Amino acid sequence: MASLQDQLLKAGLADQKKAKAIRNEKHKQRKQQPKGAVQINETEVRARQAREEKAERDRQLNLKRQEEAEKKAIQAQIRQLVDTNRLDRSRGETSYQFVHDKKIKKLYVDDTMADQLSRGRLAIVFVNGQYEIVAEGVARKIIERDAQAVVVLHDRKKDDVGDDDPYAGYEIPDDLMW
Image (tube, rainbow, N blue to C red; front, side, top):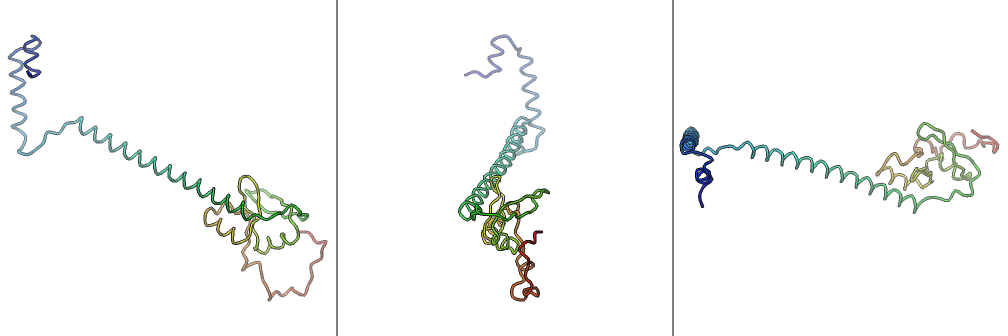
């Protein structure tokens, strides 16, 4: 098969003089380069850079997708923990007030739950747009996954005095509301 140069000469699109000048120019370029040097093609360089940039974008996108998948998995774990461990507060008569997102919220619980909430034995968790009451151990597990899900969990060491309570002999009146 004839080269492109031969085909162009045969078709009359190029002349012998022009072909010889191009051959000499290529020969000079090869002679000027040191031995072992490879002629760098700009298009190859640009193509390589484009591939590297695309690979970097793909890595960033994959990292973002993995983070979103991890967040969804954590939310599913929290929902499962709350669904299996929430306490029934349907018979609650006492209102328990707390702050969430700079707003005062109110839940109706029974007296023992209100006492346990204030002592840190129970916690209030915000999941799926609802407030649920769970035990302290479950709340600690939820905090490990997402600290913002637990709305109220009082510190037991600070609030629960125990047997050394100096006011143990004084009874709080039943009609006293905070």
